[in-house]
Length: 67
Image 1 (cartoon, helix red, strand yellow):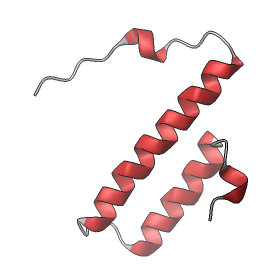
Image 2 (cartoon, one colour):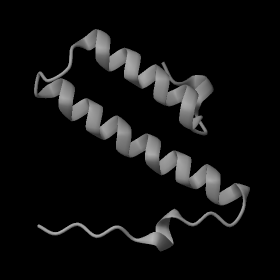
Image 3 (cartoon, one colour):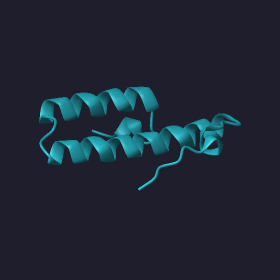
Image 4 (cartoon, helix red, strand yellow):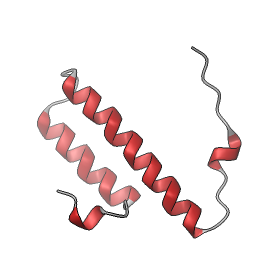
């Protein structure tokens, strides 16, 4: 499988795009760390720590009601 990096996806035109980009990065990050946890590559403690750091960094829209 070949993966191409698209510069178009990374361009930010305004604040609304930044919010959408942060939401997408957060969701993808959660999927990845969830998979790592299920595979036993990271512990529950590490999973929770990474999740909290991602919430702080990417500030998803529903951040305030997330556990």
